[in-house]
Image 1: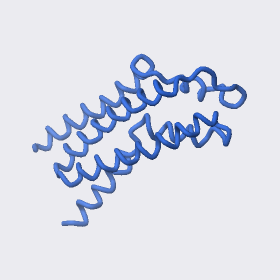
Image 2: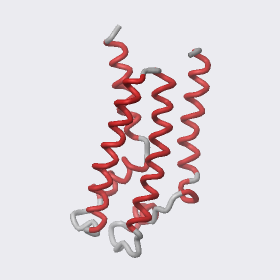
Image 3: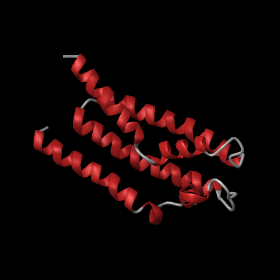
Image 4: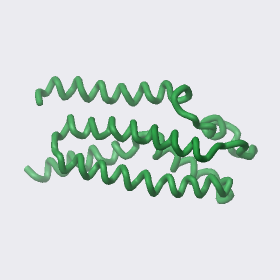
Length: 143
């Protein structure tokens, strides 16, 4: 792929992340946004529809994962990187959502920091920040 096309496509895909973040309150059900902004230290969590929250987190994670896979494909154009990333993202979601729902059902009895950061890993494309340098290093070491 042409160098300039890579830059254009990568920029468009990163802008998609910004649009998802900008419109997250309109697109996704997440009552924990307001909770973690200021009330988490002294307020109890009321009326959270765990099923709806889980489905919306899955939807958001899926969109972020597809965009992440698109960025990986545009930058590296290797099917093995894409397969590994897809498997890694799927496995990470399964582990994170099980732990998060367990902590949510426990009403954050063990503290709020672990669910806060697990939620961050689910709703933001943090794994892309881990995969891109790893694949770049792999690409450099295979030369």
